[in-house]
Length: 284
Length: 329
Image (cartoon, rainbow over the protein chains, first blue to last red):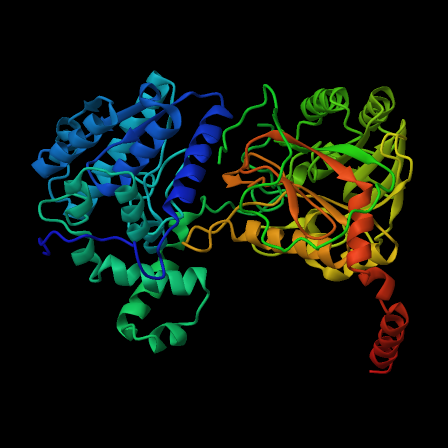
């Protein structure tokens, strides 16, 4: 496990973002997306990680502190630093994070399935948090903001109907390194910017250890493959390890199902999303 | 840049020379007498409600009345201003025939306000083809219809799935509220039409003084140096066409978001030497006013007699040769 704090950002290099432009566009995206469906407020699951911290900061910047509900949902094994960081973020943004411990319901469930492995447990936690966010969405009249970045979405490194669920996702077209660059531009707390990225679903979990690659590499490869539509051979010719490239390609293909709605059996002449095509903003 | 929805009103933006937008040297000219005065125009950088023609028509009428009250003789709305852009299966549901009462309301507004109107809609033909079209309306009549010829069907665009392509680039006399001593010759290019220089060249050959470009251009590009790459492309195209064809270019882009896609605005007036003389800095809803000077067209063509020198005979001969070869091939 990598424990050395080091900045993961994209201030230089091929993925350097125009932070001012992107932040302004995302502020508009959030305000427009929330208000056009009749809401004024949003709710975010704030974990203390960089993704949800950035989304919360963007939401406060867009809608004002009064219109942002942040919920921190720890499990008993969560890293204590996560709570420290989540509260540092909410304090710095002038909002109060509600703390909802998910340990009782998650443990109650797995008391019935004690043999469940840590992946099942991690997925259950992610879905428990989703369930709480959507319940509070109703109670608070607040739209759920997504916190999955483009790297996670492309690699399928998220829980389907868990942390991948949301109404609006401001950062789904930003690679992890670009998320860091924006988080720096918005002056998020230093610890959020420097700690190793982790889903914090079990003790010692590390994104980069699980992926077997550094985000800086993964993002460069994804950018070449996806955005620039380079071939596998072209990417390898640039000096990236062939096994890494193949692993990334396999993950992207293998997780396509997670990025699509469920498959509907074709029967009629106008099947939803096949011939029945309306914008999501239909009539908005 | 402000991308928030604001349908409660529009912000007038005073026309003027933007600070950093002009990098072309102005031609050194002696003073030439005014040829036939000026005419005030307005570009309505508008945020249509997707698929809601009734609401959009009402907003059009408000903006038209406001522009007319300031003395504008033309108000330009963006591409598909009555319907919104990413319509998908709503295309046949929001389509209007030329005889539709909604078009009638715009005709009435032009007559009552003494102001010409360029508005965008899905236009249904008698054969039930649906076009992405812009109407030029003046004095209670539809003076000109442009059906978009180049329908982008790549990247985030899917127009050919939903609409039929036009097949004409025609210039027309723009009455401009019947208020000008000398008529203005105009042509309309809708958004992607602008990306094909032959379209602008065909209008120039028909003698236009005014290219009107209603647009629904989505902003994209997040990397440093790439930001709003689309805006950079339109900056180059509008200035280049204006300069090479010594014509005014009125570029009217829209505002707002559809399904998470933001439109970048940046509506502008480029004068006949290619200088940006008025511009909305940002994507917020606003109405940009500017006064077109007939004398500016004259001065540009005195300084740069490019149209006079255009070798249409060479162009035609070479085109014929290519067509013959193509036919034989």
